[in-house]
Length: 195
Image 1 (cartoon, rainbow, N blue to C red):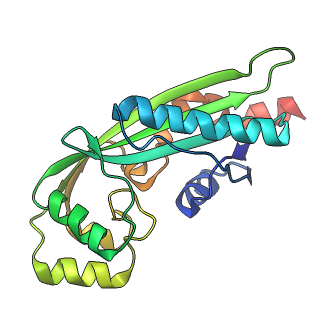
Image 2 (image 1 turned 180 degrees about the vertical axis):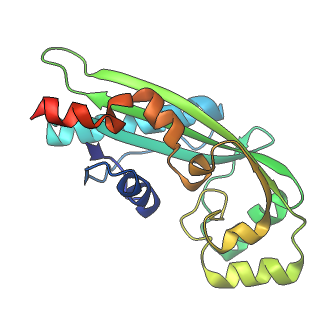
């Protein structure tokens, strides 16, 4: 499998599942506005197609896009500490959605590649964030390059009161959806049949 992502979290999850893969980082423009469910799937599709075209892969290409959505709006990644503070303050004491679009593309002999796509949704409730906790989190720098300016698997877990749904989705690669789209990934007999 080829992972179309620079995310170390996605690499860690695939490795923990025992799935062999190589990383090819896509270079594509992403949708940052519009209907969030459409945006995350379309962004994943763009990443997968860019990598499939670039490497002419025979292996499946997996791409994902994860976004934090509050009041129907994609929050995106913070560009600086001030933006991170604004995002985290807007999440304080509230429930938001974490959406991930997954796309797996497999090369076909002729014509368009075969696509399997899906959407995962988890609900995350933040505790009320006292300024001392918020300041400490921002000082840690963990907010950098994170959707919604936090990482639930790290120090950001102190910001979270509850997660409803797939935790791996909040981390960045929804395992349940991945296995649903590509069940043969966890079938050891599939490896021996393909050799």
